[in-house]
Amino acid sequence: WYCFACMILVLPLQQAFEESGEFTVLRRLVAGARSLAVFYAAMGALGAAAIVALIATHRLVASSVLGFCIAASNLAGIVAAVFLLGHGLVEVPRELWSAGSVKYRQRAALRRLGAAFKRVELARGELRKTQAVYGEVDLYFSRRDPLRKFVDVLLQEHDRWKEGNPHWEEEEAA
Image 1 (cartoon, rainbow, N blue to C red):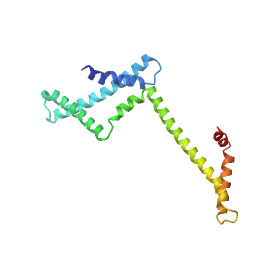
Image 2 (image 1 turned 90 degrees about the vertical axis):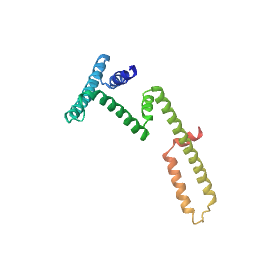
Image 3 (image 1 turned 30 degrees about the vertical axis):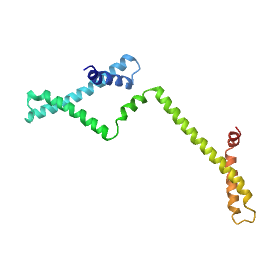
Image 4 (image 1 turned 180 degrees about the vertical axis):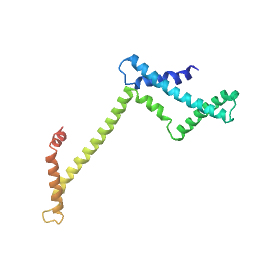
């Protein structure tokens, strides 16, 4: 029962407290409690209206309301679990928990940074290879070759790119 009470009262209050836009601790606590009270009042009113409607239509007798509430809560839990399992969202609570941790977010950012650095280094390596090929292509095509005009266009574009990126030579030397 302790876990159930925490799940229903304490954890949502903590979440509402953290999401509150207030500045002082007391105001945040009051704002969180107020938003939870509104939510639980709305859900209670909806549930009470459903039970009254079932009793009014003679589909439910007053003596079996407790059993109906237990069955409805079990059904809601099972449907939620099947929905989450069916859509692969079982990982969502764990990801949300981890996303709330500053250390986890920092580690994830560093992993992304490392992967991006590897991609940049691979791209630089490819660019260096391409530049070397441009230098060698000039040697393989004579001035009378019919493809020489295309080689000249490539070399001009390469020189224009180097002029637009003056730091490339510095980075390459380092």
